[in-house]
Length: 322
Image (cartoon, rainbow, N blue to C red; front, side, top):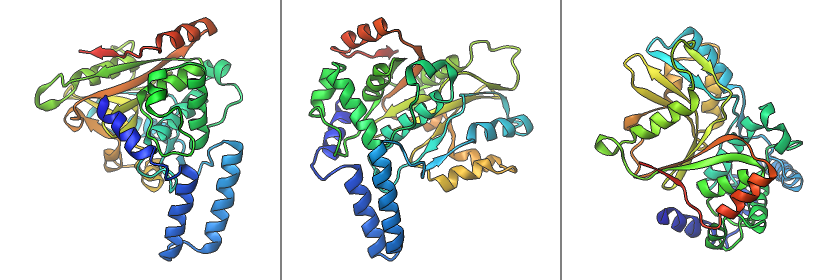
């Protein structure tokens, strides 16, 4: 994963400031170009300062209700789909002026957490939490490092994320979830398992994650499973479901933090069309990066298990497939 670590450093740790500075800088550019009114700038700045002070995401890039809309769509349309499995509810978050080009890992963590917060099974370890803003996520990861999680990853990022634009990846997401007593695993699909650089084993793994009982289930299965964090070189996304097509091929349903809210909101329309789903659908031929890592959530850790996992993270090893 050396390339990814290089990116983390190259982007994040150049002392040009973090989320707050970036948001202000980019909004000033908009004002200078005449695309934002100064009064709007001041209103947004005040909103941002409040959000940062309480550590909660302001929800300005959030779209809710997409999983429910997909459920309706598949019930009534999608004749080419034999069966589809969907995550529990997930809010989509897209990058804002503050984290364009470097915030995808944080935005995917927000998506994953938004799902866990709607899932009673995680009440015990997440009680009272709201979806945090990016600087708050950065300080939560720093806290996990201080507790002793993943010392190698911490030192690669100089033990510091707040006030930087450092990228985070699967290891940081795993570390943060584990520190919150959320049980999860990292799986490394470190090389292609199909022709032309494709990863069919990744698709099969995800199908097995969502579908415990395959035969005799309804066409649209709303599972109790959280979404899956999916990392590759330079970008990460969130897997929210999987289709099995009539011709038995598989297709992932993916939320991309780079996709703007106005595009995602088209999925909420009553008369949603197959063309709107294009941005979510990824077939085996669409995922051709050299390697992929996923973080999959599997329940809640006891305090003892959390301590054991902290010990194990001293030397970080991911499960490898194949």
